[in-house]
Length: 204
Length: 192
Image 1 (cartoon, rainbow over the protein chains, first blue to last red):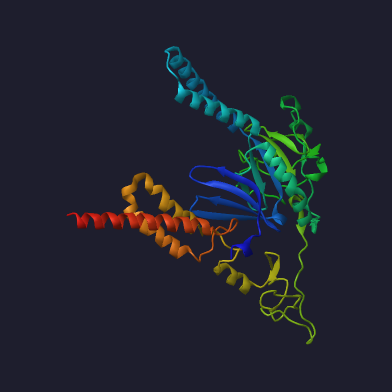
Image 2: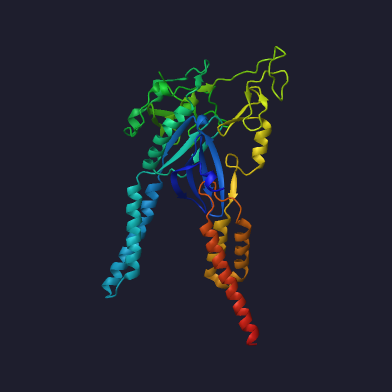
């Protein structure tokens, strides 16, 4: 039975949350979000043909982890120096210092932290397993062609006219420099409030 | 003038006017300052062509199993019933009728399963973790053995499959723990 059900390819490794971990898998026509506790697994499916967009939002998770590991390394380093000055061997604090430093470096190597959201016609779903920008870009790059081919038979609705946004709505001077490798044009994202309503979303 | 998608900011849930677009694929929410990249797909603006059911006009026309007034246009790939566009459901790469969809939902097949209990992981956890507080194994070892027996033929993880190694290890540890307790009670009985 197990071998006949091997229809999924892993897209991302486990991302640990509170008492559970998440992973992302790809089948021929859908994405599978697996939330596991180790004893049970819950599955959410997103059909490739229904995916409207991905949002990749920058978060401060990396900074907080760096601060935490840095604080651990700093405190254990100070303790190690104090113990060493008392002519003792600071074995425990050196081990904690090494672990703190190692995790700090690893956290920095993983790159900026992000939160990825998938938008469909009826919901916006987070993908917790894509928590770093490098990994998110790699996975989304892999998915992009698959999703586009799954949506090749779609037709543009005649009533879907773009909503104009005034140039004054742009404030480029307050924005940081562009950091994207997604080539797209403005024409690639026209949509209307009528064709893409956000359920339960209040108007500002 | 430019255009932007009428999607809510995924962080603060505000729509359209709260965005400041940096370029076509990135921007910032002016309400919550969330920086984001945006990857749109055709489904954002396009829709699927809907085929309306056609009325059966000739006696020779094949009609839908569920709607005798509609002309059949496809066949259910599971049961072979003729279906009109209303009754045709594209599901897991197949065209199925509603009855077959309902039958699939009550069975434990891959395309519809929503959750699974991992008997292999549960049994191994019950056999190993209580060793940290070993008196508890008097209760957990038989339970772990029960999980091994009960879960032996149950399906495992949908994505990783069932791990026989875990089940065997769990059974081995649970049997050893039970054996240890049996030996302990025999020893007590003999030396009383």
